[in-house]
Length: 78
Length: 424
Image (cartoon, rainbow over all chains, first blue to last red; front, side, top):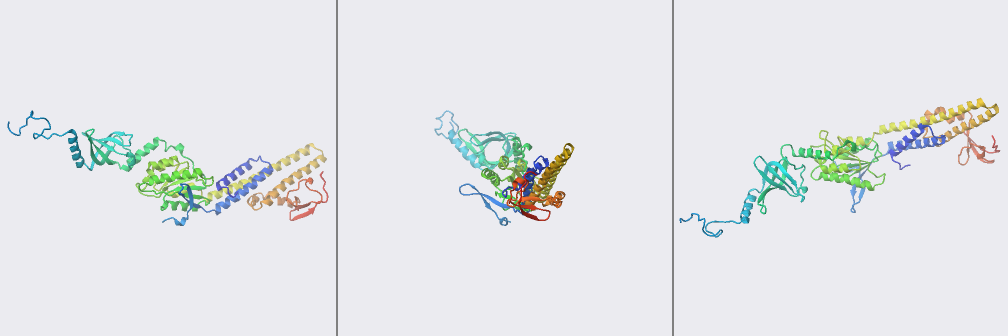
């Protein structure tokens, strides 16, 4: 669950709300979905408030393969 | 016969006799020497005609005006950095030298430079390129792709030293933070900048082919800060237009100059007037996401409440039907069953709450009327097995001697089973 992308989590949450709104689930299913929804909602809000962006630089190594190198934003030239 | 007067009948040609007779090669050699030294660097103005793209890569054409024609050639046209198309009717100024070609006995202008006359060379080139790309369908609205709602990775093609990259990163800071940026730097002005930009776009596409789903770049911002039309020229180059056209990743053009629409702007899936706006387009604001999340949370609470309401209504109608058709004894028995079912529902909801109390807080506010704790307050209790926490719903689930845990309105009782009666 920790690896899920924010956008996916949000979409999943949206689907769960839709499923629940349909109202044709058994009580067990509905509660399971509800719990999952709450979990996703918590995850989304954690990510939303906590995450920081990460910057990489694309470069080619000697073998001609692409590599991502982390870039410190402070090092950008003025 | 007086000396010096021509004797038409004397001697054989070339035999001297005061006459200097040249062979064709000789005179041609002289003409070549004279013409080529006299016209070794000339500017010639005229109208282009008879354009002939030779398969060898050389472009043959004529420069003409009202009274004369001058054959001309541009060798290895493809290697030259000529930004407009040389076509019939173009008024041009050419720089070069005259060359005499002995085998054909003619001369032509070997063109080193060519500039269109009248409208600025850049503007003309731009108009020609736009026309050409439009014909090829580069600007068709139906091929514009939508941007991803919230890309987890954004590719940026711009110069590392420019204002554009800083502007973009600054905007991203103000917005949603859970984002990765991949910069593929390219020079954005000067000779060769167009090729670098195109290459950077292609490389990001190639990188994507091998990237895992989480690594994949989902949208590209290609641009630079503002500048003069000449500064922005790279974004008018065909090579850039083609790279954007061929990109499998949707492209936002972000050339900081609102007045001039570059070719890159026309081909891109979305045009942003500045790099900052591009960043805004690509990442929604935190506040909008918070709102969306809050809506979903409310949706969850309402949905659960709805489900519980439905079940309760079903129970009530069941009770009504039973009371109409059944004798009292049966009714009592069924009522017990119904009460048990009702309790099960309450127990399950209660179980869910117990496990997820923290997460349920927001929903609980809306559900307070249904809170299992309130129901417990009315004297119901929930019994769990002491080991695993499973809710005891049937006598069959326990045996004499089992430890069980009963949740009351206030507090919990641990007890041991004395007797099990399986039939009610």
